[in-house]
Image 1 (cartoon, rainbow, N blue to C red):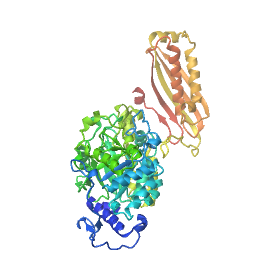
Image 2 (image 1 turned 90 degrees about the vertical axis):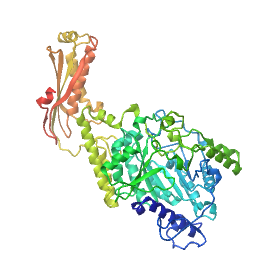
Image 3 (image 1 turned 180 degrees about the vertical axis):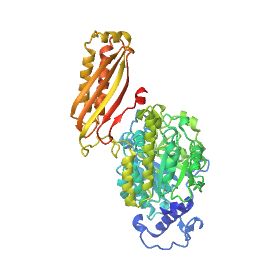
Image 4 (image 1 turned 45 degrees about the vertical axis):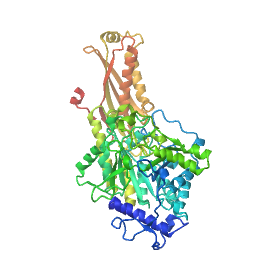
Length: 630
């Protein structure tokens, strides 16, 4: 992974050089075992195609074959990169891959079998493909993925030269189970991994994916970096109002991690409610990064790269931008895709597909299969139709194409920050507190990266727990009750109040105790006391407290036709009784409303608040007169 410290050209040159040397030396042996053996000089007669300035001083062999006309389109593009979706299933429910209504999964018998995946992969390799990436859904939920990798890996060290140019096997994964499965994947011949991660905030991850697991993804990133992989990339789809505030945080990852963080422009697919206003073009991202790192420099892109590569001098990793919407790279596109149900897509954004599954199941004639592939490739257009036309065109949801997370859907067009603002506090104070905790958590996360592996992981674990920012959420993002068993038992008292404003006619009847439903004030008082005693049944994470006293008082005020409600809760225990006092006032107020609504619905419940509390670690609290007036 140290090659990431230098330019991308040097990295790619050394990677390919190392692989080619292995192939020229070892046959019918494991690639991983071969890497440990003694180096033997290659044959002099073999062809050399590496520039000495771009790689090591020793020139290494490659096998040059005429490129197959089957995989060349009419614009002269040779398609050497194949993406194969292994499954439509996923262990996340991301809003950017799954439409709200979900997707209908293809019956198992209509999906490509293990043998069919391997057969098609070999067919494409023999005709010039040198790189295959397995996607999904989530490819790691398919149990035979290591079997597929192993079978294709054997081709690279076998006796048939038709396969020796096959250079790279990679996967694109959400990272949830990658850490667990990585050793087996490496043994099977995996070369590179792309991990999808769109946020460094645990809550935001849960919001986007509808699942917990952010800490598993982070663990997978570290484990991938520490492994023998040639390439570790992080794919981050950027969308205005969701995660555009984290762009510089992602760039900071590359300071101490030899990873390639790739920012992907938000793209339209079926079911993701694409909106151009949410699409942040790479020029804006680049400008934002330049403000923090003016020394950011462009580095040379490799042929057919979809990403525009940049690097902050001195950083171990690099960043890139996949600009499908604002600055397409169709002219150098060398990609083909096979869906999990066996359809060949020559363009990610095209709706045109041909079924290779049906072809190979109905015919054993390889020439017939290749003619079907060639016809599809020759129909590939010069470029896609542009983002507006793409948004209006029919295409598969991304979950049914592959899992590289090219799009995001936000419910009701609200940004995540807007939702958080509404949830935490209608005023700015709550939001500022939340943002402050998130910034502090991220800082701890980045600081941990500078430590040795064992210390780093311990610190990251602590950051994960803190990054939730919520006392009632565990380090896996699940709700939990706070353990108060270690706290001292002290006298706990809390007082709360609220106000019910009635129309004049309802107030007059209440004042005369002539409301049809009965004695409102007495009933409301009893309801408030009962609610305080049952608070733990109403508020899920409240503790069951043995109250020693609850008092609820209701007073009438003719000047504004209101009923003021005050409550006091008292206990000797390890946690406060504020919730009991506030619940008493709330339920008493609702009881007044319920009993008076037959007279009028023009009733307002307002100003429910904690007035005073004491006991416990936080000490004495008393709401100031200014706060009371507000």
